[in-house]
Length: 128
Image 1: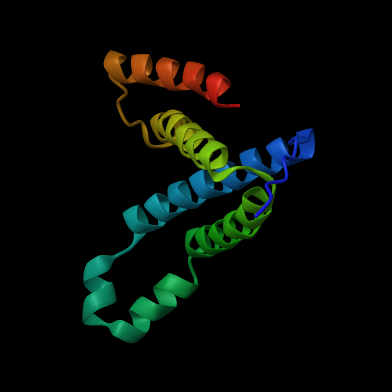
Image 2: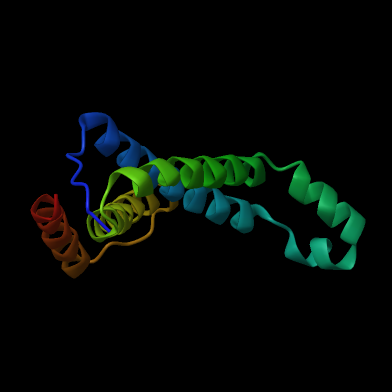
């Protein structure tokens, strides 16, 4: 099987970033949804629980972001070597998720984690 080398365009990189951002947004929406879910009521009153799920905007935001992220990931898989796309996407997601969860949920970020973010960010430039 002959290997075709494709030089990734700016659009390819933007789609990779978009796909990663959708995955991060999906996780943030899922956390917000779970934080606001009345789990006891969900279990004790299943019909009310189902209504609480489907009427929650965070539930739908999670679903739309997750599906959009997966569909855009298909593009990424067609255009990138997996050994480049996956480490870049996961590293970027790690960095974005820590920063966003710190900002949105006031989760603490110890100094050693900031060092890790700096090292990962530096490594992202080496992977491209």
